Image (cartoon, rainbow, N blue to C red; front, side):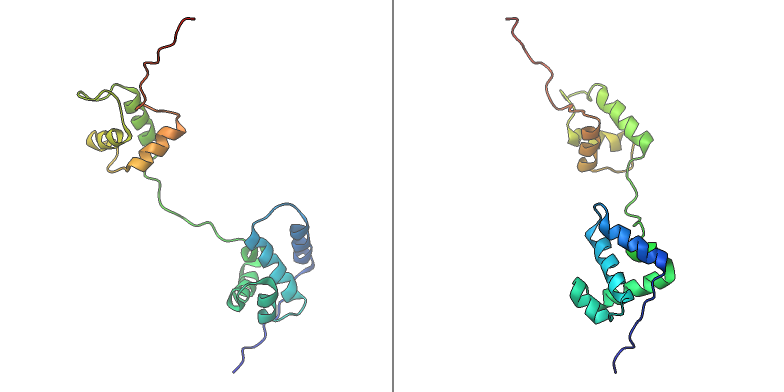
Length: 157
């Protein structure tokens, strides 16, 4: 049994907005493809026809119609923000780690290393856990390189 054809009726302001979007500036490819698909659907093409012409799957086109009907044009063109992982370090923890790196290294060490900073941050209970890469990125953003020697000799010529 074949699926019922899905029809889409775009309002005039939405059609004008899609026209402006396609004629202006740089946009994400997925947004442009969705805009083209919506325009083809509004012109009377079926979901499989639109899928072939725009190079999307028929299911994606059907989902696009559903999203337009439920959430409007912005809901159909753009995705919701994804939550992602919570940041390990907040501003206070970052400041404490930076202050620790700016102080002298622990006894027995000549200078701070990324690994040493990570170990000491956990040992001093600045953070419950932290990885070396997180520390490396933090130091990189603050332009700190504590593992470099600072005894550069220059001639007075």
